[in-house]
Image 1 (tube, one colour):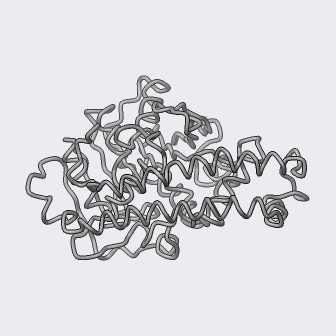
Image 2: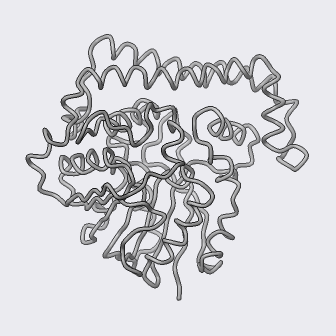
Image 3: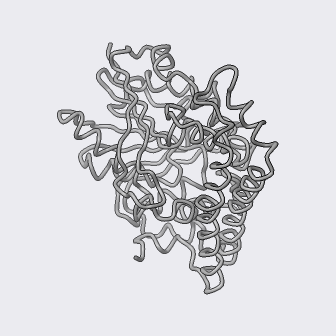
Length: 368
């Protein structure tokens, strides 16, 4: 299926497609065949539950003594690097296509406001998150948005097309859940924090068509891409370069605040600041929803170790700490009442054999 926003996605040569297919099937082989053999032989050494005596750090150290685990871990990391090596070559070959100046002629929906005064947080710049070269803020030239092209394209490859035709499964699932769970809730102003390429911002405008949707991120190149992308999909969204920790919006500006895979890519201080900012920005009876992948709420020791792997070997240094935070205490710390806080799961709208089909929601309603 050709995507509506195909003009800002890369074209692949025969050889690039072949390499991409190899990377995909190599990933499946690593996760299915090698993984099952490694863990089936190690399950007897794992405890029934995580404890102070058997925490994730100690268990990881035990596994790292096993050649099979190190073999699997190395292959998994190498394959992630191969993914971006292949995409990087493809995108750089066409780099002149991915400039805001070339693609901004027919922009009629929403607006964009960038600011050179926004400092980039260290948790964004100190590592290449997900092993993506240059991270989320990489700019090859002025007005470049190729990092947005790379990230959007990588989602199709990394998820094996399990995020929907427009990588918007999280936004679709969450906005649908909100409409079903709170049928009388009609938000007039919506804020998407850490919007990235805007893939999950769009469903909120579709599902709440009368609402004004604002989307913020610290990365200028991602915002350029997101703005053009939303226009190609003909969606009216307003993009601003701002830090979710401290925005310049007025108090009680929004009825609904959302984020998608934002909070685990920040830091402990930043996460506290973000929840505090949500409380400041929400109107009375307003709702915040932070969407993430499976947390440490899962009972499976193996699953938790897999998530911990992302912290150490996929350049997501806050992941394990983030997942272990008591979300109820965190929200209460900034004024949300315990009765108005909910941790729940929603089913994916784009389930396939490569994905377990659930998202975790950290939600709270402001009540003054």
